[in-house]
Length: 414
Image (tube, rainbow, N blue to C red):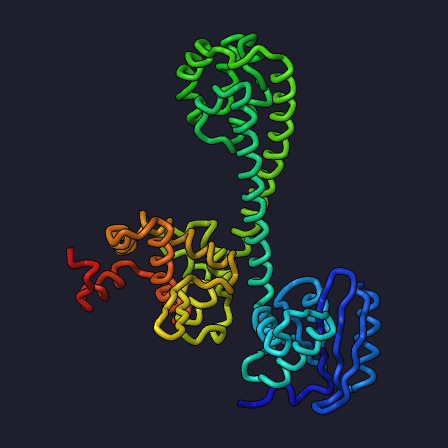
């Protein structure tokens, strides 16, 4: 194994924080180490790094307990710096080996990061950024997911508020995050105001929306006519009405932002060479296909085996043994968003793929819960995705079923 640190003139171990960074600097492979505390501002770091570069006269390796984040983004803009990400758990275990008391000190962590980079070059690999398109897509899909969580939170607040004084709309509308539902409540935020409106006014409101809103108009009008107020307490009605209107305004903004993200994600995704591969997977759709592509990336050397992808996605179970005891648990050290993407897609594929549906039911028949069965299915899917991605071939359900028959898989025995 070639020592990748041999080409560097200086080495830095960096323990990051919001206000300042503790660093341990070593000039050359056997140089004397010094400790510094540097400000966490772009201006100060610019000056400090350029001065260090002038001092050592060559490339600099930086070990940091991150693979992404402000400090990593800042370091990556300098051509003379190579970032070596240190896994947080590795650093913690290394520290614990020499400090059983559990004592933690920022300068010590900086030196430990430096030691790990220098002593284990075959284990600590330099950060190799994905293509610009993949990195943009990765940020977009993760940010979109945050907005979806915001939308869910607003919808839950809205439902809870309506239950306090005006629960009927929850029965009249099945989609609580739709424009129709939001506009209806903005127009009539209480049953009393709705009752004061003419029937034709309400009918015209639904007619202007078109689609199912028109077909269900008469049914809704009948329900509105028969509706009885939950309460006549004006204190309850006024306060909750104001809250409902406030939440709806936030919800509508969030929904519009999600649509903007969907448009940008779709445009970027469709331009990428691997888009067709992930779109061919059953159940991915316009949301999950970009998330899977962003998770795996476009660097074919990133994963050499399907097992590496399964481990990275947090789908591989972990076995711990001690003496006669054995304990199997799921993988904790992984990207939660990546695992979430694979598991959500696996759940969708149950209704889109014949063999996936059979496998899911097989797992359920063994007594596994829904989530456990879906995670097992995601583990299976990861191998298939790896093969398609590595060979740049589209997924073909008929070919896979043929392969299962040739192998006499028990999955198709029934």
